[in-house]
Image 1 (cartoon, one colour):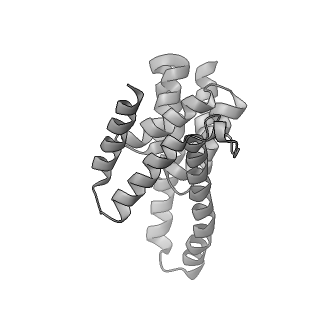
Image 2 (image 1 turned 90 degrees about the vertical axis):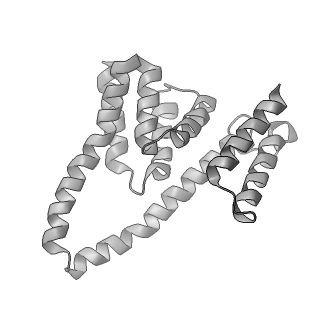
Length: 185
């Protein structure tokens, strides 16, 4: 039964997450943390980190991670298949339609109209990630005991190194990981 639940949950995520992995994160959080309570919020923050660091699409990595945590290898296969099935079917259909009707103005207008929704979903995912990183209990609260000042400092340093110094993002991620590990020792 759990395999079917994993498949159907990630099938929904695969069906409704337009705009890539970051746009899927609020949907994944809704299914995994809120609805089914398969993972607590702090583990969800780890899921986001692991999904970003491992090769491949973020939503597929998240599905594999959740499936493994909930039901082992068969759960990972079930969740991953549910996540990628809609995309495979949709891309096959879209390729057929686009090659046939690519010059149609209605198609071009439809693609343009989807952009604001995708931007909003990506922004929401970014905000959720920042809140889970900056606030200890994972909810927005400006009480000093709930704010993780260390994470804010690592974030500000990373933004500085990426934007001003133009460092390689992988090097910045490794440096932040080393700094956090050294601080915790």
